[in-house]
Amino acid sequence: MSARGKLFVISGPSGVGKGTLVGMLKGADDVWVSVSATTRAPREGEVDGREYFFMNREAFLAKADAGGFIEWAEYSGNCYGTPADKVEDELRAGRDVVLEIEVQGALQVKERLPEAVLIFIEPPSLEELESRLRGRGTETEEAIARRLETAQVELNEKMKYDYTLVNDDMDEAFRALRDCMASA
Ligand code: 5GP
Image (cartoon, rainbow, N blue to C red; front, side, top):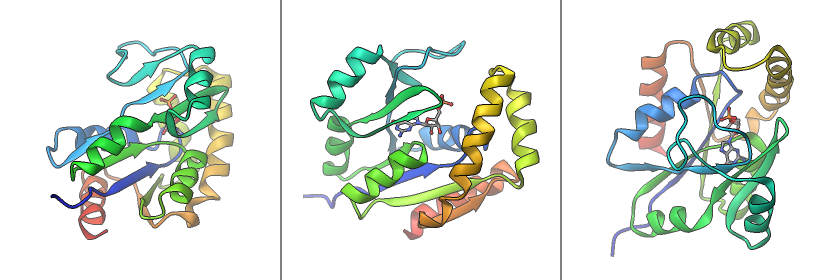
């Protein structure tokens, strides 16, 4: 029987580039990147079942009540959760699993599964983060302000993580992420 896979949880403020870093992991065949469920509306180009499983709030809360998520949290007015079944199957099959989730969810995972490895991606500065969020052009000013406020709160939690990486240069950050996963 193969050894159980490792569970990696990657967090960081919105706009830090963690989606791109995790996207780079999706090409690797030694890790499986989990697809979360969310009640937020799809952004342009997002496909149901690929970026997220898009659900209405009622269906989401019913699944949460039934214990269908390893963790779930509200973030910027929407619910996000990690479906439990597939993650457990992959770990049992000996594959490493990556969750890209926000801080409250990450801490729930650590509580339930203490062997999980928590990795925090931080921006070089808050100014840089703001300009990246604006440059993305997908959010209203109000949403950007809300995400920046949340970023402050999230940065205060980074010491609860096992590792912290600064995303200044994407390729370097990806190398650091891979090194960190290999040594964990
Ligand atoms: P976005 O709306 O920008 O796609 O995601 C907003 C935040 O929700 C990001 O910080 C992302 O990491 C987080 N997130 C995505 N999926 C999950 C999940 O399953 N659980 C939790 N707790 N957070 C998630």
